[in-house]
Image (spheres, helix red, strand yellow):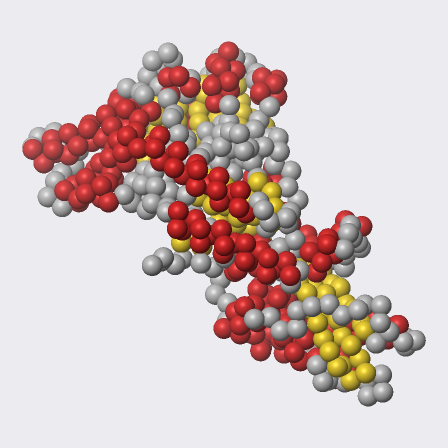
Length: 404
Length: 138
């Protein structure tokens, strides 16, 4: 029996893999020591667990375990990387380049940098969500210290041309940072091959626990340093003070180990499932995929259904836990800035649904989702005066609407 | 957001969805709202000239659950009412009936506007002067 609602919002967060929980359990109970306690076995056991996790994580992204700095999550890692670089490299310059479709953790951090005197360039994206490499090259200046461009987009799954971007940044003497939150554990991310100097990622997007993440910081060619944003005991090579979240770190490590083993098989299975979902939903007239179809995370689909309203659509797909392009924050109904950056009109951005599949998603759930969305869209269109006008060949742009 | 049971009922089982022949002299059509605002309502009434009574009402709405429910409820209320009685329908009655939260009051306003707009369309078609529309709540 299918359990409702069906969770298809795995870009927001994933469930904890039972194997991850199992690995964490001892560290929530008997092995409770502080990893910084050097004088007794309780501390040693905790430190050993943390070191083991560092190895597991390093194995997934192909780095040295010493290059992993533990944080509370990707938001903290984004903040620490950008603010930390801005402070550490102030002598060299004050210019940062990013994109308009970054997560708020990067965008709002960049706004903060602007407030304290830095200069930030926000590169636009094309209709597929990709930046123009020539525009990046043109934006580089001798004062550019950092290029921060996300690996895979959280709303559309679009994967940027990471290696090319890194090469351009390095050619002009800047560091390259990426927000790898959605990509790490889902597709191969190799900080050496990709040319990544700093990267933010988190456990709870890859079947690990919430409240723990990491920042990768390159130690060689070049040696990258960030100024700590929190004062305290000088943990994590002085870059991030605070007692280590040992059970969380063990969970992140286990999640990375499982990802390394199962990523390829998961990606193939979820990609096929996503493609089937998408193909079926696109049989509905006037439905459109948002973002790049070619360069995309395998488990993500973002589709707009024209002539149905977003909030009504969300109500109609009540058996699914999905996200919509309407950032429905209390009273205001703001369409997604990411979809708007792709060139979507407000109404098309509002009427979009984001599907995020997981390791635990089944074919049966996808079958249900296909029928449920089709039914909701069809029903709402039968109720929609705009759909009727469209069917009658009326150009909606030529109507003088009574704005209210 | 939690919707009231009545909103969910109208959303799930909307009353009087459909289209009346807008070219008929006895039919008045009101089209209000705008796609970029997220709500468009089209409300139609058919009026029996002899008794000045609304014999049929249909709607189509592009909008959230509350907008769909407001227009569905409006068509239910309109049937059997005289045009004058219909004009007296106040948006706050819709708010009360559907238990709309403050952020959804504009849905009821839109429904009231749609009623008045449909009546005006009927009046103009039948040689009567257009009524002043109260725009105070916009």
